[in-house]
Image (cartoon, rainbow over all chains, first blue to last red; front, side, top):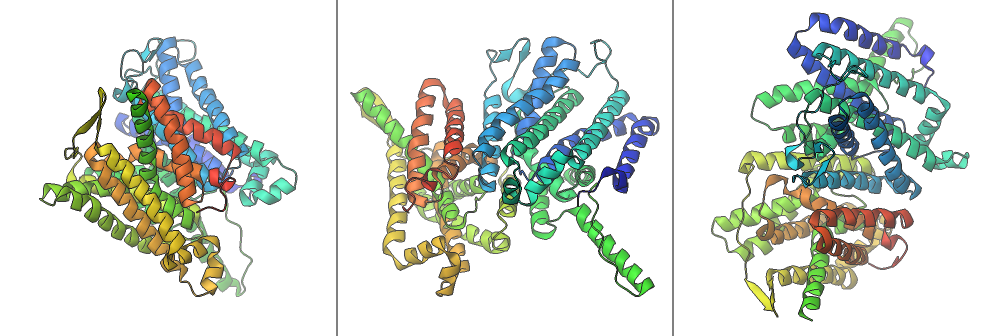
Amino acid sequence: MERSIAKDVGFYVMLGIGLVLMFIGPLIWDLFQIMQITQYVVLSVYALSLAYIWGFGGILSFGQAAFFGLGAYTFAVASINMGDTTLPFVLSFILPAAFGAGLGYFMFYGRLSEVYLGVVTMVVTLIFWKLINHTAGPEYSIGDARLGGFNGIPSIPILNVPGDPSAWLDPAQMFQVFMAILIIVYVVLRLIIASDFGRVSVGIRENEERSSLLGYDIRRHKVIVFAIGSGIAGMSGAMWATYQTFIDPNAFSMEMSAKALVWVMAGGIGTLAGPILAVVLLQWLSLKLGTMHILNNYVILGGIMMILVLLLPKGLLPTFQALSLRLWTIGKSKMKERTPKGKAASDV
Amino acid sequence: MDYVLIILLEMLRAVSWLVLLASGLAIIFGMMRVINFAHGEFLMLGGYITIMTHNNGVPLWISMLILAPLTVGIFGILVERLVIRHLYGRIIDSLLATWGLSLLMIGGVTLVFGNTVQGVSTPFGAVSIGEYSIPLYNFVIIGFAAAIMLATWAVLKFTKVGLVARATMQNPDMAETLGVRTTWVYMATFGIGSAVTGLAGGLLAPLTGVVPSMGVNFVGQSFITVITGGASMIAGTLSASTLLGTVSQGVTFASGPVYGDAALLLTALVLLRVLPQGITGRIFKKSL
């Protein structure tokens, strides 16, 4: 199923769309649209982090928000203290990745079952949320940055040109940088998935026992996959923090974890492009539904989640692919009067 | 001497608290290996029913001990029939669906009752031991925790229903072959587990007040207790509650309740590293 990149048309299409948007976008959109789309870009990076570990490593994390929030707070604290934002941005990848590796060690070397994994990751997020909410007093500050408890951290610096803290990026530049990050994350993940390492993780996803009997150390493998995903989630948290110039404990909320799950489920588990499309579609949808003031966010999110699980367990992209494939093969068989062999779905 | 007694009582209360929070979840997990992610919202529902009916003139004890468990139990059966039933054998999907349900319930209750804290005053006064005074309600919590555990044990051990339940737990296929309708057993289990959760929610309502998002404050403790305990309903819940309750209460004494929760999680993580299936995965394996 995991084919080499060279033959994967979908990959080039996505890459092309990304690059075109990155260069053309700021020319044709107004400021509001740019801000809106930047938000989609940031959340897409976040969605990719879970899409990778769940779809290509078979690790279902119910606590992706823990790493998102950790990255956001790391960036906030470090950049307020340092002034320059380059090193904090790097830190916001490294620290969550290291934490993910540590947590992964306990979970995967303990060989926890899927249910236990879900519960542990979720509870870790909860604890973070509680701890951060608790840090309201002035005694909870790291250097110049006050953690601020439930009030959050205001005036987080905007991303600047490396080495020059006074050269802030304007919204259009920020959009381009974030778009570039999204493209890089997408390409790197795609390369990882196509590499030997990625093939082994897909093998582990398919059948843990067989992979381990073939001599692969599934525990170490999963820890690495989990750490990569955690790092990417942390980085998206930092992007979120600098985009909003503000972060509060809701970054660690259950809702944030649930959103990542919903996007991946909606986009299709085992795809990278699907979750990105789902971010755009569902964020837009919840914006529209939210302005109607009949339903609140929780109802919308919960409702979508249940509908997805019960009615569309494969997600939108694979369902759509399967459907179009069927129409295509039906059309073809009608033309040629014979049934061709099914073609494997692409995994862009 | 008084101080020691107080500390012991507080420990006992912390342990009972965990038993109370976790037992409904443990019943469902022990039987079906499903974790109900909407557990916190089931507690919330129990709390809301208690407070809403009480504010409309129903005596507190009736709304707490009868109406809350009954309503949440029926709600649980509905959820099982409409959602969980379709997801047997797809454990991950059942987790995701119940999580969706949890968000849906938070949103729904917010829509109906608004996002404000409502409460009733805690019944009973306090009793003084030496120079200290502790609320009598603590003894109610300890009493109910003990009663739930005893009742579960007695039902499982001595009744025909319990026998059927234990058979289904051990080997559902064989039980089905011998004429047990396992789907009904699962439905009943989910209902009973939900009812116990509703009771717990009713009991904690006077202590904490109710707000739609209150579940989040309790699910962490409940989940950790259940997975640390493992698959045995009673031995697991009791052993995990005793261990974790003592640890968290100790840390809470030393540095405040937030760190108590963090200590709970750390203990559980280390423990699961050694005993990945929980305490009863290796010790007390044959117990209920």
